[in-house]
Amino acid sequence: MKGHRILIPSAHLALIALGIFILFNTGHDDAITFIIFFVPATIVAAFLVRYLVT
Image: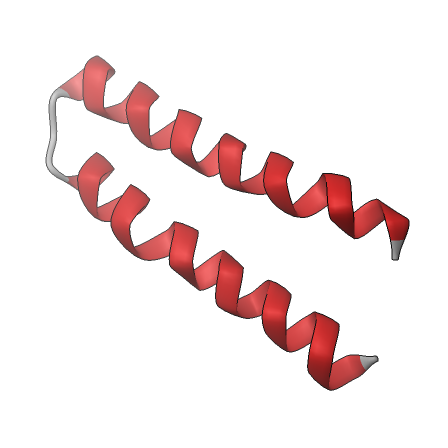
């Protein structure tokens, strides 16, 4: 479980960085949607993996 302490925050940072890259590269609103919806989705997935599987 020690790997999850590093993996989950780095995954969130990668999603935010990808959304910011798309936003500045294309100027499209999909980047904002990407940041708003997928970051909470990964938080929920991390919760489900941590508390329902273990």
